[in-house]
Length: 135
Image 1 (tube, rainbow, N blue to C red):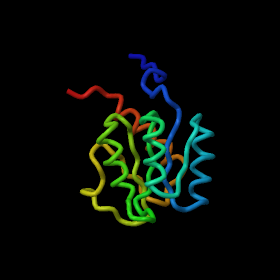
Image 2 (cartoon, rainbow, N blue to C red):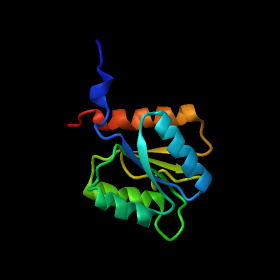
Image 3 (cartoon, rainbow, N blue to C red):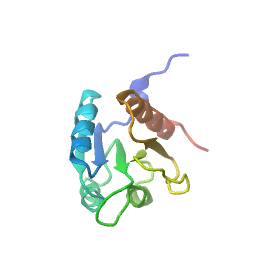
Image 4 (cartoon, rainbow, N blue to C red):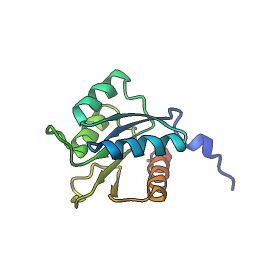
């Protein structure tokens, strides 16, 4: 059986990144660019939510750090985004332990520090998870 991977991935190649550490934001932006994505990166979830509303949920997936400044955590952002745009795939990251009950449904958790290979595999997993028909 042959799979056409081009049909499995989202049409949009734009990613929303929420990461409060400037160096991590830069590394994620560069890594995503190497993987063929463009990204909009934000230091807090409030800015990212404003942007997501502006683009009307048009993004390939979200990468959100759990430990965010200014109140809203990454998991809260993902839950809010999925309420309005349930088909947006999401990855929640953290350098600290995150209880699995905090991770929103159909969100993949990626513990920091992670390798580039782990990030790429997680992106593949979250995109494949979202493209599999559910009944």
